[in-house]
Image (tube, rainbow, N blue to C red; front, top):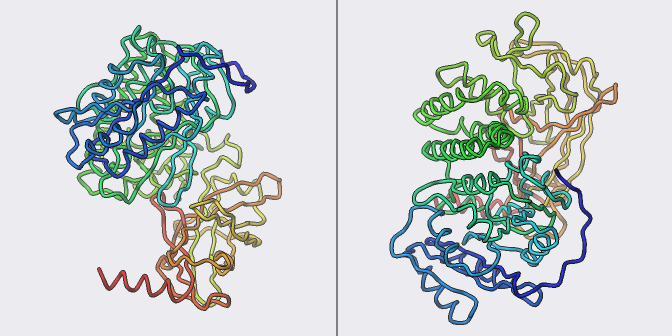
Length: 549
């Protein structure tokens, strides 16, 4: 049972309520000390972090020496040096867990940080509710932009206590081990550890073991973990390094192991929820990138995925959101990769279903040659949840026009009667809102390969995207969203699909800034975004980079 709670003042901390924080590191000398310091900073008065245990997994870049130097000035820091690299994250975490002396333990990766007050918030909830496991909110911080994206925000909107995970199966969606506080006696009682050695996505398995043991679990809305995402790093983290199909194979194996743990524990609801989560999150994420991979990767990915999905129950497929189950059924129905652009666009968030819109026996289906893949929710989804496609073709020059076309979807939009469209721009690094551009929609007949729909032209005020006094010469990414108003009041929001020949960098005259450097481009998911910078300095910097290359 999930019990909603009001925040209460924290209890008086006693000596028995001590926390050990385990930090693991391998060849991360540039970040590990920041991680350790963020853990040590949790030990200010009233926040008793007994110790920070840093496990150096046989680094060769000076990580060990940096930790030893820090330990000489920090008596609460203990450093464990492994003589051989384990090949994964599970073994060093287990080393730290065995060495920990606190009543509670939590884990921290060397390239992330704990925000101020994280331990106090988790510990207060653990003591107040006698919960051996407490989970808090995590943010993914995109660097260097410092843009924060909440992780699984639906689980952490309000404080709550879950008497058993099986009564709240949505908890399986948070597979992280690092945004949680664990009572060591609970872990010891159920012999819960991480997989050893070269096991990728070890946190999937650890979290499954925790939930399968049916603890009383508290969730709090406080931010307790900052997950740094460095997409431009020379060496990508495991979660970002997806270019090799072995990563997908490892993810499938970790998920399969997790489901088996739930099944062996008799936790059928958790096993079902884990299967649904795989479709809604994991499958969709990898499909979004499939069009960027080579033919060999695609073929092997398709084979692995078909083999794994073949073991899913029909109930698992039906419980997944409509885009995810449609994706799964296309893969199951076809022995070889196909329709990659349509799959990529549908896997985006929000999803877009591209034409053609085929029917068989009065049913909406994927295509004429796959009539068995029914788009089973098209007729029942509310308008704002439909995977509508809005094509956007930028034509930058004297007027900076955005040409738009909304595709009708099996008559669902025609019934709502779209009338107007607002184009909203938001700066990616801080979600700053730019100007909103509005236009009336005009009905457009069907054309070759294109269903009936509606068109509009919007003139973009690109000057307004540049802040007054801005000294940055680097192009700023801006994301575009559409808000469509309908005669029946059932409007909807949708991302724009980047189309046409105008996706290239342009130098444009500007009334306010003399020159603008603008580049429309398609994101990985196919959505239209803009990079915008101002002035001669921007043009010169880009030209200099090209010359150096």
